[in-house]
Image 1 (cartoon, rainbow, N blue to C red):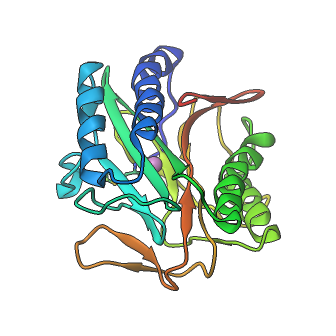
Image 2 (cartoon, rainbow, N blue to C red; image 1 turned 180 degrees about the vertical axis):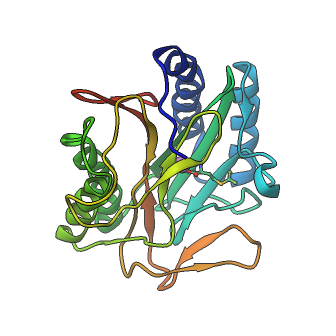
Image 3 (cartoon, rainbow, N blue to C red; image 1 turned 60 degrees about the vertical axis):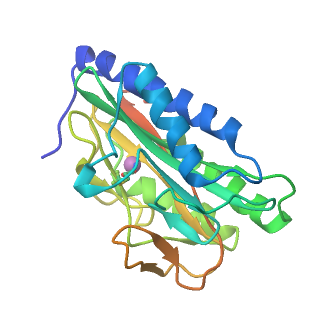
Length: 247
Ligand code: MF3
Ligand code: CO
C-alpha cells in the first residue's frame, strides 16, 4: 500500500532526514586511509543518537550495524567490520535515522585520496543519475520514468544499472511501497501523487549489472568484482516538482 503523507507528517520527517544528511557528512569527514568501517559505524551511531534519533538499520531484519559501508566492488549492504579503508577506494555509506515516528534514508559514495579517473567518473555519474531522475519528476509522473532516466544516463556513460535492488517508499516504515527501480520504460507504472515520499537510490556498476549475494546474508558485490557506486535521497513528490529532504 502506498501512503500519501499529510503536510504535518512531512514536517515530522524533516528531522530524521536532516539527521541522515548531517550524519553522512560527518561520517564522510572521518573517511581516511587507515580507518576501519567498524570505526565509521561507531561514529555514525554515536552521532545519530546524539541528535535524539535511532539508527533504523541496527537490528533491522537482524542487521548488525547502524550503517552500510560498501567499499569498491561492494554494491550495497556492506557490514562494517575490520576492513581498512585505503587510498584510492570508493566508500559508499548508506544510513537511516528514526525520529518523530518517521524514517529518513540516504547514501553517498566518498572518494579516498587519489582515486582513478574511471572511479571518479562512476561516482559522478551515479550522483548525476539521481538528479536526472528528479529533473522532470512531479505529481502525475509515471513511476518508471525515474528508472528510465537513471538507466539512460548510466548506460550513456558506459555503466550499468543494478537490477536486483531498488529504491522504495519511506515513512513510518523504512521500506514502504512502491518499489522504485533504477531501470524501466518511460511512461509506465503508477502515477506518483503529491505527498508520496520515496527514496531514489541509483546503484551503478562500472562493469556488468549482475551482482552476487554473499554468505553473510547482506553484502552485495558486483559479479565481475568491478567497482560500484550508490547515491540516495529521500524526496517528497510535489505538484510542481520534488522536495529533497536529505540534502
Ligand atoms: N538504507 C538501506 C536502503 O536504502 C537499507 C539498508 S538494509 C539494512 O534501503 F538492513 F541495513 F538496514
Ligand atoms: Co533506501
